[in-house]
Amino acid sequence: MLKVKNLTFQYLANETEFCYNFTLEEGEIIAVFGASGAGKSTLLELIAGFLYPKSGKIIFNGKQIENIAPEKRPVSILFQSDNLFDHLSVYNNLALAIENKNNKEIKIKQALQDVGLENFTHKKADELSGGQKQRIALARTLLRNKPILLLDEPFSALDEKTAKNMQKLLIKLIKKHNWHTIMATHNRKDAIAMNAKKYTLKNNILTKI
Ligand code: ADP
Image 1 (cartoon, protein in one colour):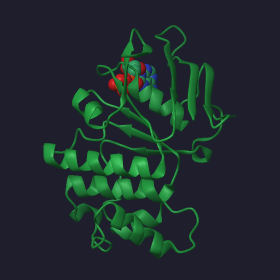
Image 2 (tube, helix red, strand yellow; image 1 turned 135 degrees about the vertical axis):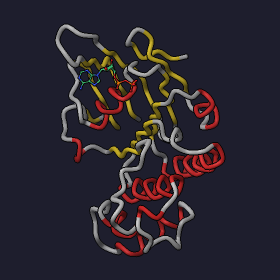
Image 3 (spheres, helix red, strand yellow; image 1 turned 90 degrees about the vertical axis):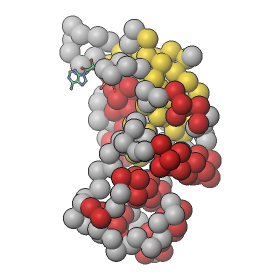
């Protein structure tokens, strides 16, 4: 279980204070709505550890994680645009994500199968379509195998059909791996398609809808 308790953050001392509270069970998805600038990315960055809170707690399976370094957190992130290294092959992009190098080739093959791109091992990242890149980024998330998944506008760069396929794939993998998933989005349709619990940022406070 992931519990975010009275988590507050301010970029500057005399500016807006954001406040977040929610609980997320394994396999569940939370969708966070809000206009641009509402504080969605700030929440993801606090959970990922790129920002440190002013006060409050992030508790994962009974352990406080809000003050530990990003690379030590049980978190992986899927961004709107995929952040692959364009000049590297799919294989090398994925190899970079693997901490335990034992059976590296088998692990990469399995992850590519899971996202339906098993024949793409030797393609360069810049030879892929937007949707294929996104799936490779998802394969990388699989290889990192962390129990908390952060999705930052994951479908907004994809056409409608590709976005639908990506949603189906994500739902399947979230269920299979029991990931705790937090998705920042401005699109309610995405939240409905993903069967997510819906929250919005109202006056800088995360509020359940
Ligand atoms: P969203 O993801 O909902 O678009 P953000 O969480 O990125 O919103 O930003 C929330 C607010 O914090 C915005 O008003 C934004 O301008 C401000 N902000 C974001 N990053 C910084 C920063 N590094 N320094 C100061 N203010 C920031």
